[in-house]
Length: 207
Image (tube, rainbow, N blue to C red):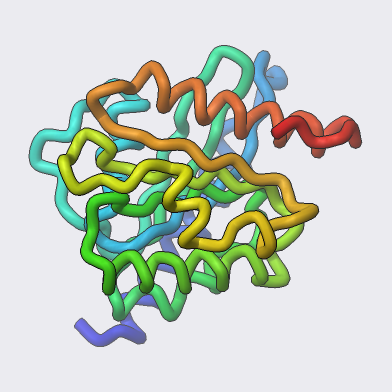
């Protein structure tokens, strides 16, 4: 299937999802606020596995995301509608077409990847932090696969990615993550929700 056809099908899926929510989700207002979040990162970073575990689905049989997927991830104080974008080379160039309407960003990187792949992840994060549709949004940056022997700790990722100078004045959180400790991952997402709530109320961001 051509890349153009894949993109067309993906855009149709977004349109269907939007219409479905508009037509079928009417009724009493939800007891928890909902936020639309885009989740990006290179293939193999572990985006799909983290989201599956957050939804209590487990990660058995999960493969690389083709195009995108959408999950409604429930938390005690909010629901995150997470649009996960595939990280393959032929998909990354279309990421920006899916940014519209996002209220927050989750960026997942493989902290145990090769130096070359880590450099690629660094470039993608820099591009996202500076993109016109994302630059004012809160970011949750997860240095995933912390359970692997070659994993780099978050403070090393922070220095290598030059987050302090690049993201100064922005709202961002950097944490290590692994599917072996989903309690900590859930707390990281709750921190992101606090930033989203602050955006709603106009309060200063809490990092």
